[in-house]
Image (cartoon, rainbow, N blue to C red):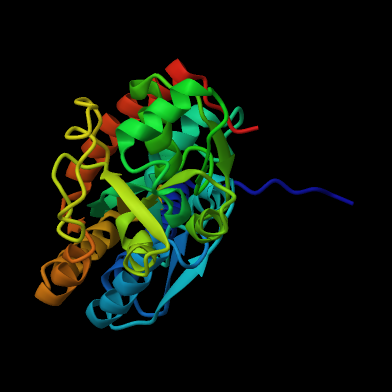
Amino acid sequence: MTVRSVHFSPQRRRWSQWALASIATGVLGTTFTAHAQSDAHWPDKPVTLVLGYPAGGINDVIARRLAVELQNELKVTVIVDNRAGANGSIAANYVAKAKPDGYTVMFGAIGQVSVNQFLLAKMPYESGDLIPVGKVADGANVLVVNASKAKQFPSVAKLIEEAKRDPDKLNYGSFGTGSSSHLSAALFAQQAGIKVMHVPYKGSAPAMTDLLGGNLDFMFDSINTALPHIKAGKIVPLAVTKAQRSIALPNIPTFVESGLPNFTLASWFGLHLPKGTPEPIVVKLNAALHKVQAKPDFIEYFKAQNIDITPSTPKEYGDFVASEDRRWGALIKELGIKID
């Protein structure tokens, strides 16, 4: 068989190169246009709001109300997907690995966003895999005891006194290692100079169940989820973690008023998208979030539960997260807290 060599003239070679370049440019241009059109039409199908804690806790309460409001703004269904476990890292990893097209959004809390990177020996995701969209809200936690123990612990001072008398005898529950309830208790123990036993749970609801059952001595819970039990007389509040008293619990002192001048803490929540999500989608979601946060009924609903709505730009929220990373990274290192 004879193999023939084909030789093109210089003119024909130039024409072929031009044709190939034109085809490539056309393909790339079509792809770019398709992406641009996709961004422009976002969202045109349901959006999933993923959170890392079970139903019944403060994350779930805020996320579900937010989802309803975002549906009205985005004109598509917003589905709440609870993926509990490992202090929210299961949910965070799921979102971090999701397609960056704006249809999988993380409702993030302090644990997933700022704390896990200092707790986990091996992170399943990098903090940079989740980009900030905007801060949603922040709220105070409240130190509560079972009503049957209110005579034994009528105040923060008495609780500290008892803990100092018998180190490691008292125990407390939390939403999970590294959660805002755990960090509240860890900061409390550090500043009060006491040793108490930590019992982590997979969320607020199961921890509260054991507190109500008398299996825990105390717990830091969000005011939002603790309030019904407080009103029912099943648990008694001793102090709130913010610098100011709660509108919902005006007669309950702050920790500063209770003798711990450096104790202030807020649990906070924000929206995040997978790294690589186009900026126009980030901007659109932030704008929709702002519209929801400006609604008087949305503000008042949470204000009554001592939850402050906190609008921000993506950059402002990112800067806030960075400051929280520094604060909690230092405390976790000092206390040697780890997730087994």
